[in-house]
Image (cartoon, rainbow, N blue to C red; front, side, top):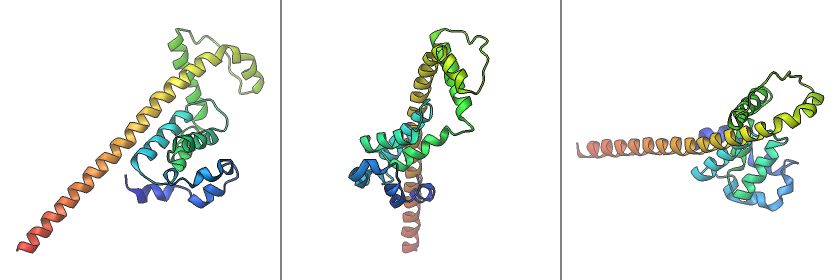
Length: 179
C-alpha cells in the first residue's frame, strides 16, 4: 500500500504517545513496530480493529490499543479500524450479529419489542446475550480475518504494480541508452 496515503490519515505519533488514555502503556509505546507502516503490523492491526468493531464492548479503542501493544501490531491502524462501528453503524451491526447468533443457535427472533433505553436492555439481557455474543464473535472473527487478508492482498498487488513500473522504466532507460 502506498505509505504516504496511509500516513495522511493517521494521527501524529507524538500526539498519540501523549494521549491521556494511552499513557497507561508507558514505555511500551516506544516500540517502533507499533508505528511503522509494514505489511504484517498494518494487516494485524486492521484485523484486530475490525474484529473489535463487531464486539458489543465499551471502550473498543482502548481494547484495540491494548491488543496492538501486546501483539506488537500497528497501533494507529488498530485504533482507527474500530471506528467501523460508530454511532451510525453500531445498532444495525449489533442487530445483524444478534440475528446471526439466533440463526446459529436455531432460535426464532420472536416478536420482541425494542425500546432504546437501559431499562429495556437490562430486562431483555437474559434473552439476547447469548445470540448477541455468539453472532458478534463469529462475525467479528470472519470480518477480522477478511480484513487481514484484504490488507495483505492489496499490499501485494501494490508491490507487483511497483515492480512492473520499475522494470518498465529500466527497459526504457536501457533502450534510450542504446539508441
